[in-house]
Image (cartoon, rainbow, N blue to C red; front, side, top):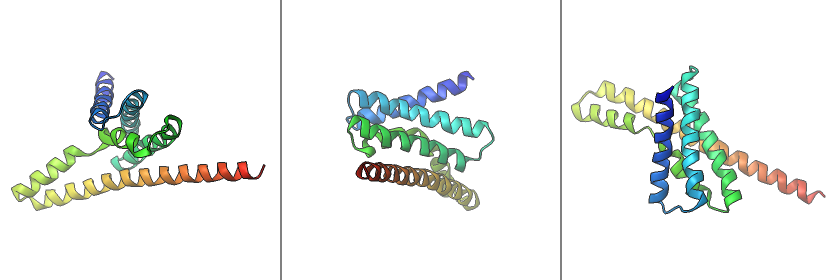
Length: 150
């Protein structure tokens, strides 16, 4: 259990570091850090409950992207300014490293396996962002229609 708490804390620190790098200040900095931690918690929960990497990353990205859509409207900030640092803990850096290591060593079979895994992870992240953006757009559109009908 302590290992998961440490991983989540490191997810928060990673998001915080990139938030500072992107010059995010004030409340947005705290929310960005907490969003990075939330994404990692959702990912860990998915993996611990038997989900494969793709659905776990998809759920985590969807949670982070929806949070950033809501926070962007509440904090009056661009969505990407909040979304990018929140997603940093979910980036599959280890798999990218091992994929390139296999390529440099000439182990093309292992390289191909890692490349497939990396592409599925990147696809899960992209799909999560697209779904959240579509849901946010749909919600805004429905809210505007409901307000126009009054």
